[in-house]
Image 1 (cartoon, rainbow, N blue to C red):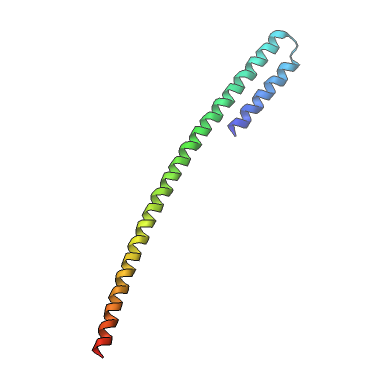
Image 2 (image 1 turned 120 degrees about the vertical axis):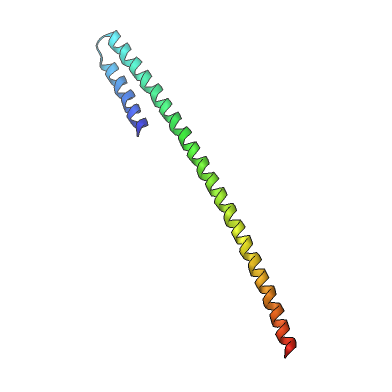
Length: 98
C-alpha cells in the first residue's frame, strides 16, 4: 500500500513539474519526483527484507513441525510392531496350549 502511495506521489510530482511555468518550479518538481522514487525503492526494499525474514521463520517452523511429526510416526510404528509381536507370541502360546 505504501509503495502505491509513493508511486502516485512521484507521478503527481512529475505531472505538476510538467505543468509548472518556470524552470525553477520544474526543477523543484523533478527533485521531488526523484526523492519520491528513491523513497519508493527504499520502501520496496524494506518490504522485501521483511517478507524474506517472515518466510524464513515460517520455513523453520514447518521444518521443526515436520521433524516432530516424523518422530511421532516412528514411535507409533515401533509401538504397533511391539504390539503385533506380542500378539503373535500370545497366539502361538494359545495354539500350543490347545
